[in-house]
Image (tube, rainbow, N blue to C red; front, side, top):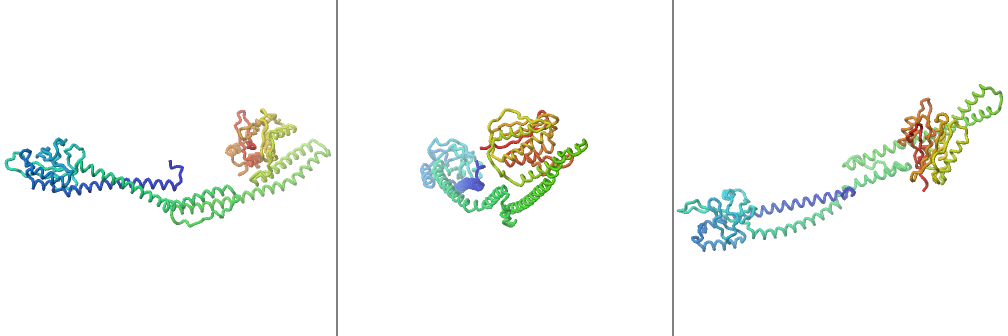
Length: 499
């Protein structure tokens, strides 16, 4: 119920519940203490009532009403009604049995009184003491008691005068008054608690939670700033000393952490930028002389001068190696250029299905050891919003990479299908499969260039796939390796369709 509320609201409600619970506990304890005090006071004030009656009206101790002095009884009742109309007067024998009741006949429901409490009262033990209610109530009541003086000629020990001070009449009136006062006290307590809660909300809770709210805001702002690399880290500099309470200590630790993160991020960005600039420079420096060298080799091969089998074989090998180095330098240059940007620079709307068909036909026209085929039914019109040249470059790299690893004349299969708001281009070959490290990085969506992949034979590998992966990321897509039941490699280039 409280999980979706703010910390301030939860703290306020928790304090309100505790305050009301404390108020209810205080009210209950107060009521109990007040009742105990009231009964102790009444019992102390009436402590000598029974003894006074026994001393001044000894005639009431006669067990026979005909022999008892009726005037004495009436005088006692009149006096008691004036003093306390709610009391009840009983005559007990020596065993605690009710011998007579000074009042309306037929009211006695329990004719045996616990004498142990009566003897404790006569012995002067601490009050309040509660005894048996002859009216049949299960609740012990406060009383006053005195022992009759022995008479000459009595065959049995004298009994007791037992006066219940908290009878039904008094309890009914006191209960109404107490209930009214309890409700009045509860209402006053609730009103006072409301004012206290409002005061705590305004002056304490918000004041106590303001540092936490400020820290949460700063953490949220830092998270937003972290998604925009162009924001300056100077705005996240430490704002206070590490001393103070726990919230300030957390805030200071957060400030120190953000400074370290920003510093490390800045250093990594500088290193990555320097690495990209170096790669682009090296590729640029290599591309011009290699292009010239390759042109000269081609001219030499086509000149027809001094043909011989050895010369032709050496020249073909030199041309192949030159073309390989030229393609490698071109890929390095393209990868460095793609890594230096964070968004697609030349966006346009084009039909991806037609681009895939054109790319496959381009490979069909070239004499390749492994044919390239377009599998599956046509998915229909598929439009993409992005850089056509980059998408074509990524698709060409995937197909070219599959051709290089396909054994013999095994075909390279290219298929296109729509999956919701995405289009998936599958390139499959029957080769030996991807290296374990490269497949792991593709599966986890990690970069294929940081750190660079090392070939077993030496050198850097995976440049074509790295370019395709970077192009997919720039367009909001992915490059993944899918399971190939028949063996080989199955790569999936997923791109979002135009809205």
